[in-house]
Image 1 (cartoon, one colour):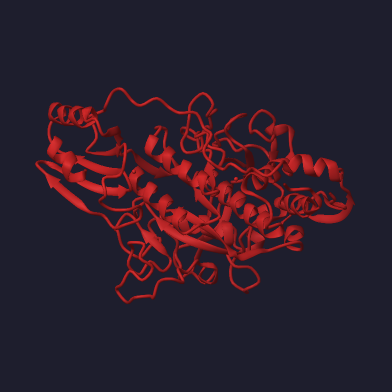
Image 2 (image 1 turned 30 degrees about the vertical axis):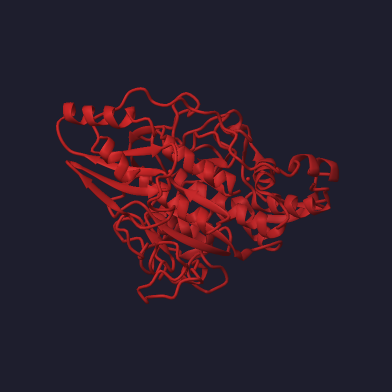
Length: 473
């Protein structure tokens, strides 16, 4: 085994707020209860230390030999491939070793349970190995049954905009083409007429010249990367349109006379595909996608997927994003057999990770109640957002209605874009504080989410605008 190691050797003054009529629409204004002092207190001080402050989880003492692929973390990089470089594979006996990122390597093992157990024990015993864990499978949070799609098209189908007070929020700010939101999912259809204008484009890469122009190890990565096929086409397919639906909720282009509109009509969407057309993905590919987003200095990463298994590798990647000041929005999960559960008692990852930048989202109905399927937590889930019968873009020139915390999460991610655009001086932790504090506090959400509320776009952007009067240092 020593030969293997040697070869390898890894976040004022709002003068008025909208009131709603019985149908939920914005009608008149009333004096805000927020004064300047309360605004600054809600905002919080700037966080000068964005490093991960989460608790350290003990290294696993047992290794499950029932997997075919594992992640090996060395105590220091062995000088092979820097983070973000293409895969390099090493074949030793029945094993295939693949560079993931820095000091992380993927290890494939074939053989009987006894043979795999022996190999795993040998790897874990090496003095320069930090830990070994299974490369856990990851799935998108599945959509739950929704109402039949109505015949009337486009914006009128997006009931959640009325709940969020989106029209009032857009009168303050519509987002910014300078803010990048990474969608780590099944891919994004960058040719969709409602998404194309808002797609992130790698300006340092010359398209289709077969060269790695920006030197990041990915050839012709114009819109992002496909980590399942290891190529430059991160487009979602009609078989797995989940990622395109998520992207449209963050930022389908507004005022373009086409289809729907996202919460942030102006934004740049980075497509990072780590789940294939069957909806399956693995931890190591999620980590590669996160590291790519970090390298490209995105503002936020949307994660509408999850697993009930803790992964130290994934947790470390989230910590790297935290250190870079990147917001990490995570779906709370859709429970078990359509019934949501408390993730304080039964963790769901990545929503249950404790890094400061992890912002978890539950799903609500049109009646402002937690959906039956939505997971919840007084400590680990930050806010709720509409997540039932949500209409958005899917692959091709198409639109579809889906339900799930997968839909609620990008709605909040889009809101974060609006807050940042309204006041670019806010630091990441202040943005998260604003989203929590500006949420509409509802009896139905008390003890279900940390804020006790469902997000309100107008309240959030007004609090962000009022915060410009605060001493931010």
